Image 1 (cartoon, helix red, strand yellow):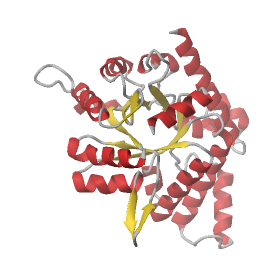
Image 2 (cartoon, rainbow, N blue to C red):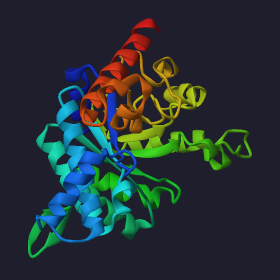
Image 3 (cartoon, helix red, strand yellow):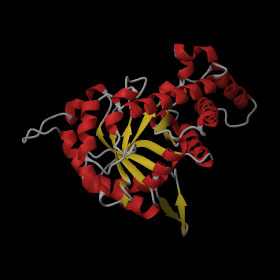
Length: 315
């Protein structure tokens, strides 16, 4: 699967992924009104959660339609859908399928990881197939999933097994972009090395179990907000693709990211979520207004591609 992602990155010239992390405060008023009218017309149920989920779906669809030809991948964050209950999960399911119809690689940001049997069920739900009535049925069917390694190999290897069976991939949390990540990830072990380095070494080891050409289907999550740690981990995991959150709204810029990439210009894919899907709320893109929010998202994607390409060319 990682080779499919690399192929799409090279086709688009855009090592970026758009995070589809909808929040009601990002959804323009006219989209919410359209969802409310649909509710009154009994197009779907009469539940407030169903109305919110319908607004999320309509918002996502317009953004996808506006940017799909520019990018290789999207990353929906499942919690943003779960907050709307079962209707929200339906919106997530519809979003994943629509993105796949548009030829996009889908990275399910689900951050799963548990004891063996539970991890196996998570892996089946998001990457594999479940046996029902004598048939193998795909469930959410993302191409990649994010995985929490806190439980160790017991929690990760079931995902790797499914990756090998289904040609899928994972991104394991190594050094996350949030401010408090260092409370655990930066703690030094008895030999003076931070925990995130040990996790990086384990990711490299796990990666050898699922190679796909030069790179492994087992990737790593390393935040753009920690470029020094990114440099260390890039050297530690030369055959690991790095998913880099934290660009834009969290402060990461193209110039901070060059060392996340290998010399071949590959090895990393950079995520921006609200910096793109809520671009119309930024002063830079305010000229588009709420009605043209999807055009603002497209402009933000184009600017992000240019920023990263310029930084890589200048290194």
